[in-house]
Length: 166
Image 1 (spheres, one colour):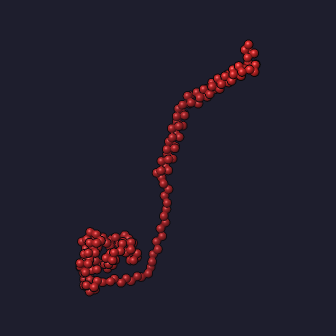
Image 2: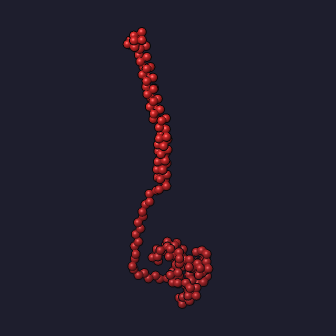
Image 3: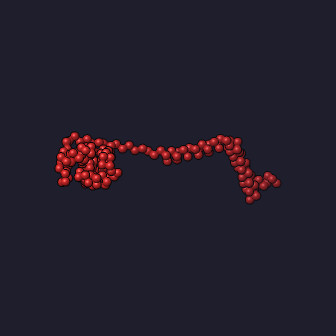
């Protein structure tokens, strides 16, 4: 009877054959799973942890290490002589202004910066007109503040006006 069922092409034979194949496939899959995952579990865990570290390392590296761009700056040096005329205030004569500048120990360049400052120019504009760097202008302004006993631009200009310098 068993051979008769296996050789018959009826629904029972096909069902039994399919069930046998399914059981065999399940056994093979279980054996494969057991060999790959249960017997070699430490290796799989190491692989998973290693992949996590690689992915996190690449992500952190991309976030922290941004490409640095190089900016090349050209400096053009002018070698021309520039003669500036400084307008003296109407109140004082040039001799009196020179004496006052000497008494306050204000240099000619600082006096030029003071006049541009009184004209309402910014540090950048003063630097352009005098062909100096902004840091040099800031140094002159710092010296002027000390010599005029001022804390800010407006106070320095007001003291210079009261002394008759601008």
